[in-house]
Image (tube, rainbow, N blue to C red; front, side, top):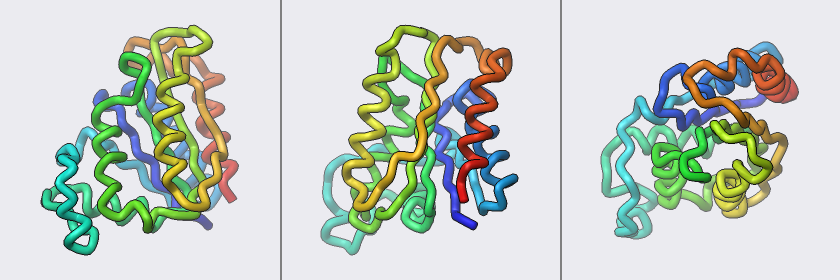
Length: 180
């Protein structure tokens, strides 16, 4: 059994990437894992100001918000799923704030299996390139990471469009269910 943490960056509850996170979660639980999904937009997370208070205070951030609990869960999990809708060819601000705030204890984040879920209205070949580069840029800072899967959810715009694309929901479920 592995600890799976899914960070859903979607600001839309029940949005396309959020739905795919639910399917991933269902698959991970069906495989017997301990799994949790956090909707980042439901949490109070300040943007990193680069003050480096954390560097002088044992990894404690100057902001007293929900990020401390989330960061501990990131450190403790075996599998981390980063999920975001694509906004202007990149990740959403909600998830970017979480990634930036890991700076407080980033050296403690190690040995993770990583999965990425991204959804976009466009279907062009390069639509997700920058989003995946953001995810992979974070991964390069994680000692001992292994990229295990990427879900390319292209061509979904309206809230719930992904439900009309059973191949995408199936991929999300199977990715979660593959965790052993």
